[in-house]
Length: 257
Length: 245
Image (cartoon, rainbow over all chains, first blue to last red; front, top):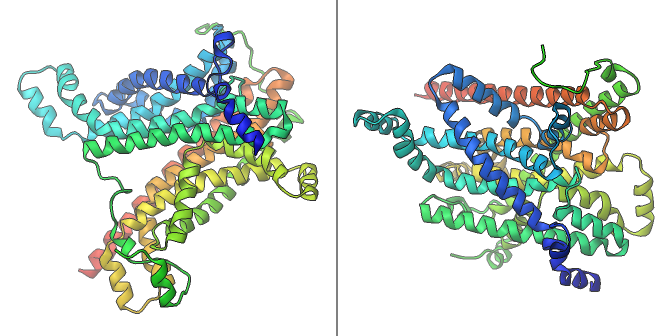
């Protein structure tokens, strides 16, 4: 227990490492990786998403193939591809950018699916109306379709960002010092503090992800999308408990409305 | 023909040479084992958690919610590392020794970690399915005299599972891909085997290409099978309704 308090007092090391005097590590590395890769991935995601909804086959099929292939490859193998294959082609890039590239490729495929779903959710009449007012196709997509689609896509983007943020912890395997690596380093350097290091790691991830999920719930409420947490389902009134409990005890346990 | 300036000549005999071939085959087997066992376990655990979360009892509702909230906000890799490095330390002394000597403990830890991670997501998906069952069906079940267990077993769960089949299938494919994370704790599955070949021969591209092909092929096959299943179920539903009317 005293170890845990000691490690919690060491929070700066978990968050930024020895930053001003050394490399930036810890939780901020995860955040940087996630933010950079989601921004780069968003750009390519919109391109591939528009390509997937295109009526031109020579655009639709390659984009569909890209999205399907990347989505069905584990992120770890993508990381290894960019880690081992890029030097073979002749590109010498730092480890950090390898991670950024693989995460952005991964993110772009998933975001292309989100963008596609958003575009398909916009009614078809909107496009026809935009075209009939004399807009070009490019203008129609830019000014009419995408702004409406983005409003529908925003909650999915936030939840995907949450999952991507958690996925960034796998860069631990290729040796980038992120939150996971920080915790493992501390637990290896001081084996008697192994619980404390792991609990601190978990707390760091938990708090940041929980804040993100609260933010996404607020966003969904603001946009007027039904969220299941606040929605009082009808089935809750029907108790689904398997245990046979006598009724007087049950009355004590059940919260009455 | 030189499109790419490749500084690498492919040697396709490597994946078929011993002992690498043996490692790869063991890797494929273990990947299947981990994926199937975690899928089955997390389906069971997730369903139980979902039923607990929809219950009105605080003492069932609250622990399940806490579990899901805890697990969903922590990366899956953390649970793998936790079960591999920390969990044996938490046990009484004799058990720690036994587990450390057990060769395949990494596989067990991988299965445990992935199950913990996946069951939270499965429970969320199944819960939405349970919530989507219309109230009238449950009332009808009550009025025909089914008890609670029968209501869940025969009325609620079949309808819930039919509704949530598409997201559940996506989650299972995701879980299959996540089994590659077990490499971090040295469980000898496919990704680990490719890395082992890479680190011994410095010729990792052939095996990595094979492994990627394996993952892509199997994921796409699973996706197509899920779509077929959904279509088949839909046809089934419509035919039933047509028969009734």
